[in-house]
Image (cartoon, rainbow, N blue to C red; front, side, top):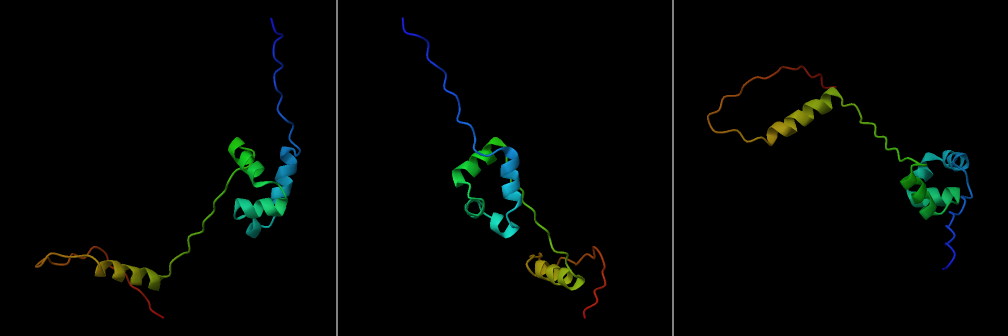
Length: 104
């Protein structure tokens, strides 16, 4: 009978979670937009960064700030939308709301 096989141990990571976090946090936001640019800035291989994302060490964050619309822009968007609505012949317009728009 052959002796039992030795179980394989995983290779230890070169960087700890804290070191990876410090490296990524030190990269400017403009260079963190893609995985390739982040890899180039931190000198961590792209595949390793991807593995960190999959394991949960690194989390993606997407932020989007929606611009506020001015009164003029809201009015123009409303006119544009109303221009694309087909109304049956003979249908009377129903006033749903009133608004005052000050155009500068």
